[in-house]
Structure formats: C-alpha cells, structure tokens
Length: 164
View 1: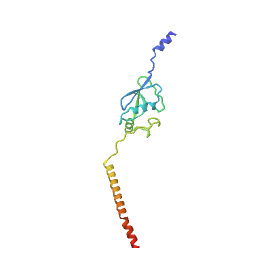
View 2: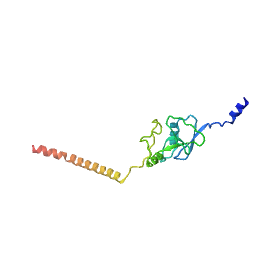
View 3: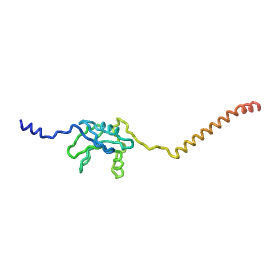
View 4: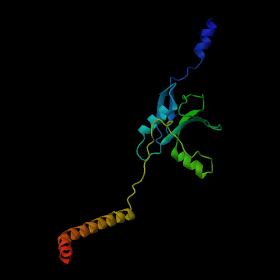
C-alpha cells in the first residue's frame, strides 16, 4: 500500500489550465480545462487590436506532426510534451491559398453564434467624390427648373385662358 501511494506521488499532475498562443498578437492566454474552443476564440478576438488578423480556430501543433484542429464545440485538450495550442488566423489561410493548399470557402470562427469583425479600408476615392458632386449639381439643376416653372405658372394659365 505504501508503494502505491509513493508511485502516485511521483506521477506529474496535469496543469490546472491550458495556454493558447495567439499568433496575431503573440500573447498567451490561459483557460481552464474543459473550455470550449469557440469561447476561447471569442475572448482572443475581443482582445485583439484593430487591424490585427482575427483568430478563426485553435489547433494543437508539434514539430514533425500533423496539427490537430479544434472545432467550435470541441473541448481544449493538452496533448502532452511538445504540443502547443495556438490560433489559426485569416492570414494563415491566405498564405495557404498562395501555396496552393485547399482552403474552405467559408470559415466560421465561432460556430455561427457570434458575428466576426471585419476591418475594411475606407472607400473614399476621387471617383466617389466626383459622383457626390455630380449628384449635388443635378439636384440643384432640378430645383432651379422647378422654381422657374412655378414662377411662370400664372403667366401660362393667363395665356391659356386668353387664347380660348
């Protein structure tokens, strides 16, 4: 019995938390064992700065091994020595497309429960400004035509009545 207790004491205890490295920011975040992947991805994306690529999902990686991807409902698991949990970003997928790897057309970062943020560049260009100016010019021309027509309406009515 003493041998069993001493052998149990020698076994390393699993860590009470899991660390996930964000590839966009380089920061590590800790999560309790049993945390769902979608929850971790949402928290990581909320802490990112504007313009940083969003995390799409989490994967476990080890040198020389095929990565293990966690779906939105998967529970985060530590696979042991050498395995690290990290996020996969939009930039990683773009690099995969340029390398010729098959990438799914639509990717849901959080299992469809929360919308993802998209950062777009401003759409103001010289063509956009020219279209706005043209719209203002046409609007003022239409207003001038209607004003002239309404000012001359009494004369038109008199002319029609006098010719009858």
